[in-house]
Image 1 (cartoon, rainbow, N blue to C red):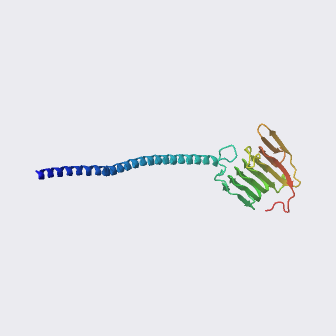
Image 2: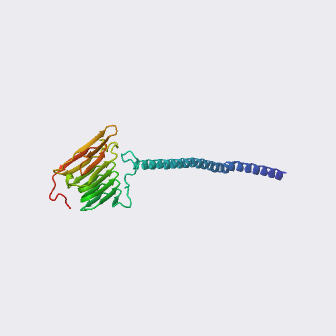
Image 3: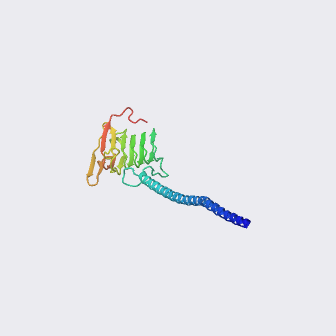
Length: 258
């Protein structure tokens, strides 16, 4: 009887012990499981946050790309802001098969030529030191400077200055002529804020005689000039907002250098 009671007590004790162990182990394992699950949940939240951040970064990148594109467009628009009114590319010369010298931006210098001088330029300047009876020079925005002309001269620019120097008196030239046109100098202001104008400066040897007629229309900002119809040497041209200078100089000996 005592043995049966002892067995019964032993079984109850084991049962209680097993239950206690189970209750003690439960928080350990489930706690760890909960921590892991919580960690996984936190990781998911972080992943979501990271995803949002990545989305934001992607949006920022796209925005930056769009901004860069807009800036590039603005730069492209600014490329042609040459202070003249049209949208032509002043850096590109109008050249053709018959053009002798063609340059877009570089300065063209010609010295010593006695025959035809034919030059086309974009924004580069043209400098001539010749003894030529036929000079034909056109530019879009560069300055034109030529000395040593003896007969025919053709000078055309839109916003550049023109300086022409003859080594022969106009009355001694037969059948020649000078044509100067500055097409569009009504182009705003320069970097210092001063009015941007283009001038024509025509120089002839001492003793030259000519009669110049100038018509001025203030509504068109245009000055057309020409010499007397009966003169053998014809001079004509037009300057918009700039000034026309006609002067004489004392030539060296010989007056024509080449």
